[in-house]
Length: 452
Length: 176
Image (cartoon, rainbow over all chains, first blue to last red; front, side):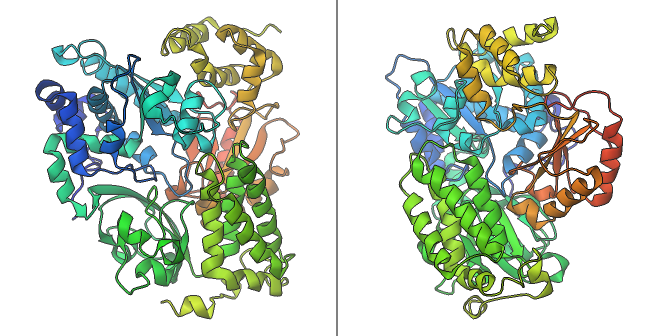
């Protein structure tokens, strides 16, 4: 069995309550940090651990913490990004629902390290029942003296609140999240200044993903160096992977980074193979935004080496033959899936979720959605394929926030690897009338078949 | 009808406003809009939004622009039960479109419409973070997951006789 740091106690009855969580070693990191370590020492351990942001970007967490403006006289804030909305990702919801105190504990330890006396957990509004779970856990932590004034008699005080979102993917972008937390529309801010200098209420702020903050608990308990021993290269520690799509066992799995992708897909311990005895066609490995890869390239790199679940291995080959670990939203497509239809749902998603601030994204996402729709329904022209590539290219890099890139990459990669499927839709409009056309007559291009 | 929160809700409103630093009460806007929608028939009328603006001492436009930005706030009246079916990639792969078609057939409405008796509004939504238990739908605060047509039938039968308006603020969970 693989080592688990976050979900170790997930199956213990009552682990969502303070008492059971505490009996199983909970809140030890708060005691250790507050009683025996300075805030800078805690930050140092997080740096040593090599922990990288688990929300998707993979930026080193310790470095992000070290950017916090410690000279400012304004109050500092820690804000937890629990606006999980990247299609394919549901790990944060699972963690908050199962072990809410792990997040609260990580928040307290992290807030202590950052010198924040107020922290907010911004949870997407649709997870309202999770918000109730967190509020109850926070209440218990206050009652036990781990929150409020003078925590454990140390003189350090912290208040923690849960903020509901209103339903907007864009609020997962950290500056849009801060705007939303200030009661405004979720329009991302121009950077610099970064939140570490001017974040919430123009004060120094750190925004971290749920899983990143939870990982601070084992890092402080066991030391950063111990954490860094797990994993592979610069991909240290464990990662929660949300597995969904055409597999036998969808769910959230904690893996040690470096696990071979093939083992993750086919092992009974994880995805359990492709459902209905079918073959693997493609995988979107890190949430909807990352490039899609055909079976041959997700199992092995272009060099023929086994592909591993790590930041480096998944991005081996750049965007030509690689992808990204992203948020760990692992979406599996079987041989009957239609790439064009699948892509259409993503294009519609990004069009729906664009905040409308930057023209390339606002207009481009809508344009891509329309063009993919007409190709899918057999009304496309061959020139539409290059038109899509052109629009995607003109969005990428030309927007304030990465939503534009996130909308462009799935389109560009689907055409890169599955161009023949788009051509098939244009050439045989009568065959694609039924949305389940590939269940009736499977189609794999020779180019993709040659990769396996 | 005068638009005013109940005393109980007003107490909660005051508690929420205290979560933020002095002068930053606008931060309470999103939570307050959720409360308002739950208390005033599941949608935000201009009168309700003006009322929220007056509580927070902000201009009405500051409320309108926010309410219209986020998808969870209904700017038009909705049926007693708002059924929201996730249709993004991972749910689509596991049959969300069949579920939507089934509900449309059963209720005799298309997505975005409300049944003539005002009981159900059907909406499709983008990813609700339930990809591992797809297909799924949300009704009020409750997620219904791993759906089949049979489960949907049972759910709709049970929801039809529930008296209260579905709201994100209160669970109305039905066993299916």
